[in-house]
Amino acid sequence: MAARNDPRDLIARVRRGDHAAASRALSLVIDEDPMAEVLAKDFFKSSGTVQKLGVSGPPGAGKSTLTGRLIGHYRSLKLKVGVLAVDPSSSISGGAFLGDRLRIMEHATDPGVFIRSLASRGMIGGLTHTIFGAIHVLEALGCDKIIVETVGTGQDEVDIASVVDTVLYVTTPAMGDEIQAMKAGAMEVGDVFVVNKADLAGRDKAVSDLKGALGLGQSAGQAPKAWEPPVVATSALSGEGVAELAETLDAHWDHLKKSVEGRVRLKIQHSTELRFWVHRHVVKNALDRVTDKILEELVLHKMDPATVGRKLLTAGKESLPRY
Picture (tube, rainbow, N blue to C red):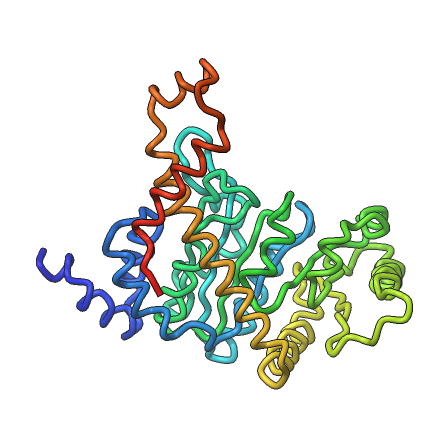
């Protein structure tokens, strides 16, 4: 029992590649156990060393099947893969589900693959605030590739760009109208676009439409981007195009490592992680101090929300370190 509660032992086991230890560490992170912060200080040392892929796109695009194919491709190259599947929370239990991600779960027994589902728990945006802690566990575990798959609904399509290095946006030929009306945010954050289910009719038109939409997204007079998002056609069902997609994803990672954009993205990720931490600990602590007496004073107009909020946040500053 002593070893189980010793963070040094857990850290050492995770870094040796122990999946059971990684599962324990992830549970501590997700449950916001005090020990998680001790683990985070060590695991953070490994951050930014491997490519983090974000898979997004509308429901029904075949994201999970494609992710499963990518996992299989990486495993054929003897790479260790970590997968985080972000799901909407159950409003009752707060749990997350992998039920419709059967193609991913086919790899669950592979010792070179680590899979975990994360509940968003109603956070503004759609990504859980524990996502960074979970990623750091997988980095420390020695994963060569980390894949974060979102549900692809709402804000998470855009938010994923502040968490990962490479955003893979998936659509299909059957979603031609959606390509025309694709959200500007999704167009801006995607690094690689995929027309999946390429065995369906309309593949070439979908690829052409998507390339055209990406071209229109370039503002008139704006200098060409250092990385022009490519469009790759795949069939996750048959595996067609998956090797080409993996090569394209590797090319983007090489681009980031050789350009200033890589450092910019790391700064964005660290900024987002810091914002999540402050929101969770400072703002939550302030809200926890809201009493019925304070609410009564608001009802009676003896105080106003702005004044109360400022006092609560000012009190919360006492817990922050001084620099």
